[in-house]
Length: 111
Picture 1 (cartoon, rainbow, N blue to C red):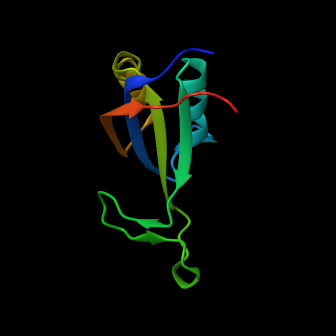
Picture 2 (tube, rainbow, N blue to C red):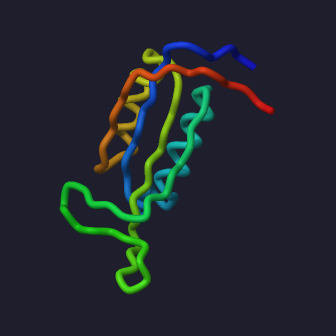
Picture 3 (cartoon, rainbow, N blue to C red):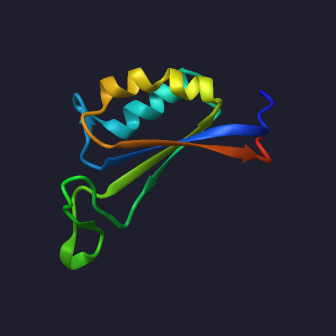
């Protein structure tokens, strides 16, 4: 296991639950990419409500149940590793948003 503490970078990718690459959900394709590329870690979070560039409101409320809830994929690694993946990400994503910010990793490891 690699040592991974101190100043690192967090990439957030905002997509919709219905976003696909080919016949596969986009979040699965991206998680597979991050594993293959050896990223330190990645998590997919499912939102309960949100809107994007088209301003359409998506929610998990029963009366307004959306079939395209927001997803956020968070990936933590070095700046070099994450910026090196941006071109590949552009090839997979038709829309969505990507942000990056510097973070401090205090603990990284298994129990």
